[in-house]
Each structure stands twice: as C-alpha cells, then as structure tokens.
Amino acid sequence: MIEQATAHRLAGDWAAACAAARVDIAFAPAEIAARHGAGAAAALLDDLRHLAPDLLRWHLPRYVRGGHTRLVPGRTVLLARYGPSAERPSGPVLRVTTPGRSAGPQRLVLHCALSGVQELLGETGPRVHDWTSARHLWDARHTAALRERCGGSRDRAPFCRADGTPLAPDRLPTADPGSGDPAARTEWITRLHEQGALEAAFAAAGIGLDPAPPATRSWNRVDPESLLRGCPLNLARLAPELRQLSRERGSRRFQIPRTYGAAILLELSGPGPSGTLRARLAAPGRIAAVPHVPEALWQRLPDLDLVRTGQLAPARLHPLVAGALFPGLEAACGAAGPPGPKAPEPVSVRCRGAWHQVAWADGGLRMPHAEEEQRRERALGGAATGCFAVQQGWTPASGRPPKALRAQWADLFRRAEHGDTPGVRALLDAGVDPHVRDGAGRTLLHALYLLDHEELLPRLLAAGADLEATDTSGRTPLFTAASEGGSRTLVEALIAAGARIDTVDPSGMSLAHVIRLRRRDDLVLLRDRVRTEHPGLGDDRWEARARVSETRAKRTATDEDTHR
Image (cartoon, rainbow, N blue to C red):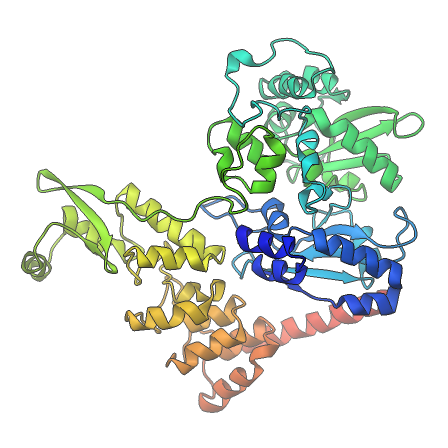
C-alpha cells in the first residue's frame, strides 16, 4: 500500500494514491469550484496533490486490544479548512471518516463539503479530531515537523540517536538539561512523569498541577496518581500545543478524557494564550461542554515509544515517519514501508519423546509421519498427541497449536483484517492451509469482505473452501459479507458460486433481516428474493426490531434536516 500510494502521489495522481490506500473519495473537485469558488478549489487541489493517504491511515486512532489493531470506528478527522478566515471558516472542510463498524472493511472516506461542517466544528466530544494544525500527520510537505512535535531537537528525536538507535539509560539526563536541547528536556520530563514525580514533571513542562481527586458524587473513585501516571502524555509539548489551540479556537479551557470518572482539565489564566496553565482532574459530567484536545496533540507518538523500548525497528516504520524522526537513518526501505510476510518457518513439536518439525507445504500442515501412519492414527480415534494433535487442532477454532504456529495464524488473519490481499496471497503461496480458521471459527471465505475477493475467491473455491462453513456464531461467509459491510459484488459472487440464501443464524436472523437491520440499500433485491423464495424464514422478532430501527433512523434524519 505504501509503495503504490507513494508512487501515485509522486506522479501527481492523488485519486490513484487514495485508491491504493483504500480511501474512497466522496466529492468531485469540480463541484467545489462551482459551489465555493476558484480560490477554495485551487487550495483544495494543492492539498490533495500533497495528501499522503497511506500516512494519514498510519496515524489514525486504533483499537489495540485482543490482538486487533483496527481503526476506531465512527470518527471524523478534520484536515483542512477552505474559507476567507481560518478562525471562522465559511467554506468547505476536507475531512476523512473511519468505518462505521470496527469489524467492517477498514476503508476510509474522504469528504469535502460545507454540509454539516459547522456542527462538526462545534463538536466537543471524542468523535471529531481536529488535525488542521497537525499537517505533519497527512501532508507530505510538512512531515519533517513530526520530530519537533514529538519534543525532538534539530538533529534527533527524544530517547534515540539520529539513526534511530535507542539511547542507553545511562545516556539520558539525570537533571534538568535546560531549554537548549529540546530532545534532552523531553527525556527529562518524560522520565519524571514515568517515575511518578508528577508535580515535578508538570512543573518542568510549565504546567501547574492540582493532584486532588475530582469532585464527584459517583461511587467510582479515582486515584489521581495512578490515572496521571498511566496517561501517555507528551508533557514536554503539551503547553505549546494548548496555547496554539487557544489562539485558533478562542477557548481557555480544554479537556483530555481518560475514564468514566475523570478527565484532565487544562485551564489558561491571565491575559491571552500566554497566561498561566494549570491542570486538575474533573468529573466529565461537569465539563461536558469543554472542548477536547485532539489525541494527536497530547499523546506521545506510539511509534517513538515502540522504537525507544526496542519493540520496533526504525526500518519498520512508515518511511515518512522514519525519515522525520531519524534524520541519520539510511533510507534503506525507500517508499516500501515495513516488509511483507515471511514464509512460515518449521515449528518444533514434542512427539512421542522426540522433537519433530511441522511446517506448511502445499496448502497443509506437513509432519514427519507417513500417510499410512496418519490414517491409522485417525482411525484409532481417542485423544491425539504430538504432531497429530497439532494437525487436528490447527483448523478448528478450539484447537491449541504451538505458540509459533499461533503467531503465524495471527499474522495471516491480521493481514486479512487490514485488507492486505498481497500478504494473504503470499502466505497461501508459501503453503499455508486455505481452510485455516481464526479464533472465532471464521475461514478466509468469511474474511473476503475485507479483501480483494476477485483475486482470492476463485483460488479458495478451487482449494475446496466450504461456502456453507459456519463460524462460532453460526454465520456463513455470505451472511458475514451482508452483515459486516461486504460489497454488493462480493455478495453476488458468493451467490453465483453456490452460496445458499436461506441461511439463518442461531438467533433466528435471516439474510433478509440482516439486510434490513444494517440498512443495506444496495442489497434490497436480495432481501426481496429471500422473502419471495423463503417466506416466513427466521424469527419474526428481528422483523419487528428492523421496523423500530428504521423508524428511529428516519426520525434522526428529519431532526438533522430541521437543525440545518
């Protein structure tokens, strides 16, 4: 993705760059010129030519839990405003939206329109992230600013040498180094924070801290030290970022939400943005109208934390990120980004008192036992052990293969999760079993809604993949595609391949129900076909829920139109 998007961007084809980065475009630049004038259209096109959509995707907020790294759903990120006044925009806003569902296709949508913008700009909650002052996160002309925004110096990022080598602990400052070396000062403040010297850390960053717990009647008590120490604040840069926000928005109070019971309230006192800055904890309900600080402006860069702790090599970063953070790093990775998947290596398994090697080959898990011996073992039944247990336990979701094999399994499905069709294809070429299932019992057919089905579906069918295989929720690949946002062409391809349309999940939900509940207007013909060919299919309560959902959606749409 990075290589292809970069090539298109450098060639001046911003639309192709977006397509390579799986970003859908929801506007036509010609319409912007007609509606908002040539000046706004020219500024927009200039930004689009320098938009790095792969870098934008890299920096977007993600869920990192349970082995998943999906984009946080339902978020709007404001990128640029086009109007006569940056402070009071009257023109369109360039913005990107993340998927509506965390489990859905990880595609982004790029918008540029005036409709709804004023509501977005007034939004104080976490749904909207304002990156208009953070062009280093998406604009290729400004990526070099990342090092400074992380608290770095002219020649290096904090905690690292210029080439990205992490500094040894004895090379870090043990006293305040002063303001002459921003990277060293960031290291000093960050270490104070991580060691629990909270008031000293905030003071060194130019922020007064009131460490008292928030005033609240809630039973959910908050430990200020634990909350503040565990928050990955970029303390060294927090004050300048807040002062800039104050100048742009005219607000003197901002919040960083942390838990249901507490948020960090930051207040400027005195005249102008240069006034004294203080921090304290507050109950979220009491400061609901206070604008949020965009996460990208207050949080330490995860990439830099991973590099400095030795969990990630600089060469595995996005090339624009690596080049910005580490000016002394040799440009060995070019525009290609992190490497693709490695061919799965053989794994050692304890079998009958000896160590055997099992490995992927020709679409299956191969082991040093003759086919006749394997047939005999299967015929005997009973509890399998050693190589046979691994072979039998790999495909079912309930199996427990060795740790190394689980890592290979996780890599395959993580690539599928993020739409890495070339990576999945490479692993299949290396011999990975096309019938493999993930922890929820889903096959690669279930994951096709995330991938290029035109390339992979014929291959999986040729390998004997089961169109009616059900996951642990009792859902088939077709049901999953309809439910999780798979394209209409994928749904049609599965049906053309022979997938049944009379499937019903264990809760009694039919395809017709899920199409209506998910408001899949593109699948209305399929819904009608299911109803015609299989009348009364499924549990009627889902039909009732669908009617309620549609009524609420219409009411919400009417309220929004009235508001506008």
